[in-house]
Image (cartoon, rainbow, N blue to C red; front, top):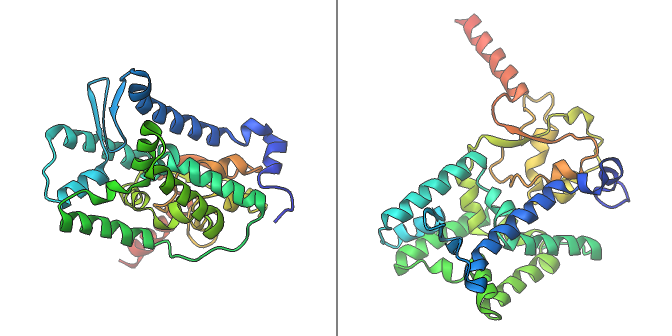
Length: 301
């Protein structure tokens, strides 16, 4: 890997904005959504009422977090019709664009963990604790079990996203302590630890978007110069290799892993423009492999 900082070649070739456009778009999205929620309690402008668990926009559009709805059902509570409609809207949206888009484009805690990751790199902090990525799915299951046992949506009392919202509205409190703990954990204990290994919200949305059509594709993977910048910036670097290095193995260039957040950072930092947004339809190598298999099966019959 080059000794120059990550993305330096992309900045030199595409300019600073060109090498950060998707990152800037994500920050605009996250801050805008957060701002809409805060306009009401802080400025008295109620365009959106509620929070990321349930909201009503312009007194018309309901949006319900399906993960919260699932906890409510596990707790034995039947949601109201408006909440069910809101959940259906959200499920449809994240099915289309990829469930973990929530993590990269909506969740405010992502800005905290990204800051910890950036600072970790700047300070040259090496080494990391090891927790299996599958742990987040076990925690997800435990939150639903806890809801069933207690009859309450217990997780939401300590959900860092919910606590961050409460902290911004009501000031210093336990919410800030939890957010600080996540920041310090990612900075000193485990690289990308919270979002990549522990967060049940991200685990839930990865399952929701497993078959979503919107995908990132390593469409020009033959141009890859192995600089490894995409692996450095990706919050889920394990999803890249099959698509980027799958030539000759019948694996197409689409990143099909459910844990890809569609953050676009691999597109930003690649000086060779290997990556781009696309759809899961027309994955060239897979299509050819399937066609060959079908031809062989037809010949055999």
